[in-house]
Image (cartoon, rainbow, N blue to C red; front, side, top):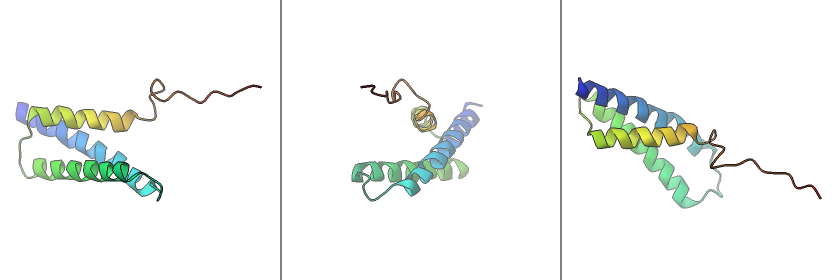
Length: 93
């Protein structure tokens, strides 16, 4: 039962990472910093590897499931977090 739960969590979380990170790669311009570009490539490749691993019958470790779910949550919520990214205030002068 725990095995199936871990596999489901990793499949869902890794799918979210691929769905959110791949379009971000396509939208990057030439001026995007190299480290950001490499980071998104590594996130996408790692998520695809996790999906293949689980579909091949592998059982992910609970640490991997938690980490993947956390990354998926960060990528899913990035634009909705107004605390971290406050709206620009207009200057009235």
